[in-house]
Length: 93
Image (cartoon, rainbow, N blue to C red; front, side, top):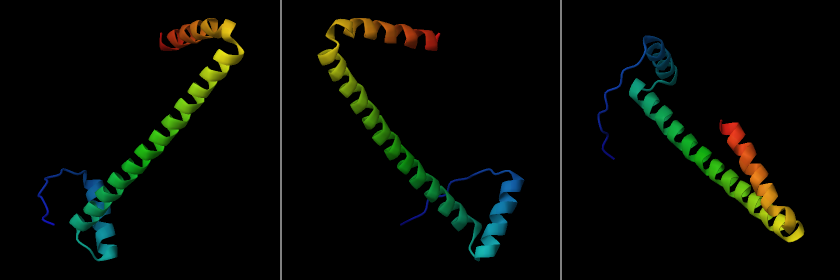
């Protein structure tokens, strides 16, 4: 795989830390930076998948509660929705 040149400006402190890591591991600074960026990209993907699963679980819970309230407390359903809307509006104000 061909590498693409990407200019990057770093604070001197970070550059010194990268140099120390590179020296300790016996690898070029660029290799350490590529490893770090690769790790960050993978971690970001993992977090996105976790967030997606959490969103799916939340939506399931909301839908399940909606069904239960409609079936068991049909007369109070609209009042509960109105109260939820009022609370959400107050939180966002």
